[in-house]
Image (cartoon, rainbow, N blue to C red; front, side):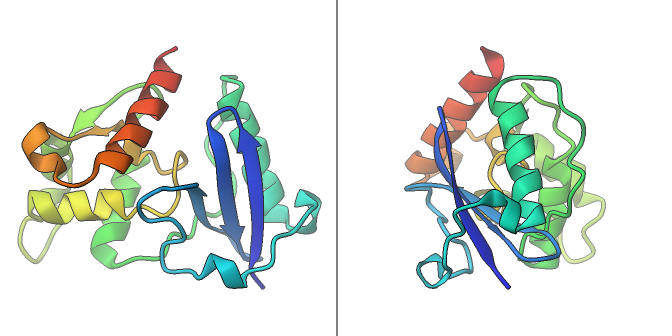
Length: 169
């Protein structure tokens, strides 16, 4: 069963999507990849987060994040849906510490040794970063793009800028 919950914070409304096994997505309204592979219009929202254990755990984690309190690692299953290449990128993003950033070129360097088919072009890595279905918890906002790499990703860049500023303040 799928569970959808609208989490409201000072950063905006974040739609959480989970099943009984893990968190499938967290999306800000108007985010470029809102809903990812899921048709969120056909998932009924729950009104009480206690109806779904994973949603409840994600809310507790987000409450801690938003209140800028020290938090432990995520103790519930993240289940982003994507290719093996995307999964590799998303796993690497989770290693970037709170409040820190890396460039897209640094990210390419980090993953290229693990790639068996090619080295992962910058464009492919950007595609994986921007298709990240679990905002904040998989911190794609901590990856900086140069002007010529950004292309038409203004909404993603703006959201990333907001989150980076939030973590620095």
